[in-house]
Image (cartoon, rainbow, N blue to C red; front, side):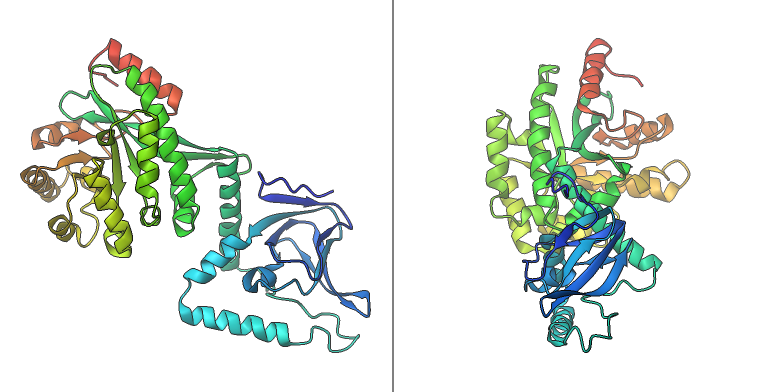
Length: 406
């Protein structure tokens, strides 16, 4: 019997088991990980085999793309493992595609649907839908991306995505002021997955919305616990938010509900955004400004790496910005970088903005930044991103030896 647990992206089928039947609704497509599958159509009430698919092949994609009933059946010829690709995953990508591409895809699907699948009983090598052509590196990358998205959905369901917290410290005293929440994922099959790898997929799809909401909820709950260890000062959490999250009508309402439930103040939540939010969606930008009016702090991330950072500062109100680690890496060896860094800090203070410099790894870098007048520091010199329990230990250590020295 197949394993249809919603908490796993992998589906197991026994030999002879039906994966889907002709006429079924198209709720999922599949990537074959191991085993083999026979695709067949019904001719005069008898199954007529069209093709045998094996590892790396895709099946069931047509019914997912055009929502028509399945035009063929599929069964496992041996014990087979597949990755299920949901209709949401495919439909989102089709909807986000260029209109010309959408037209071509719809035309192709209609043409395939309109072509008789069997011209004669002797032609048995006709395929349904997209063919898995000769293996190529590009195909492998696309399939692995689809696998990763399915696994990410399962990870969200199984609470495998957990925020870790990297200290944000007073640059002069090294006292912890708050933390940046950074999502970490340990996959049962892949091990530790690079944040850059899975966050980019999440932001391409609607997965970023539930992942972001879960991050906000957990980070606020954890902040309450951290705050009990620092009764002398209010701590804050910085949370990265994507334009797609901000485009949701209820983003601010949900955010306000979470902080009310945890009895936090809006100023204890800092929302970090990149330049993309200013370029991609006016609705997201409007939400961001409403968040600021409600008392949440807004910070521009990766400042200095984009093309229009200064332009945005003149047009939109933010509370601060984070200077990218690229500047920190060269402040010791490149005098021009040091001058640029000091100019950005001077500008920020003139505008009444708070500055965070990330990527601080050495005492020498810290000495330069202290002389330059930076407000907040972040980097391995003060601590890497830590799980909840280790953050508690760090705060206890600071309370016993203030300021903390690492």
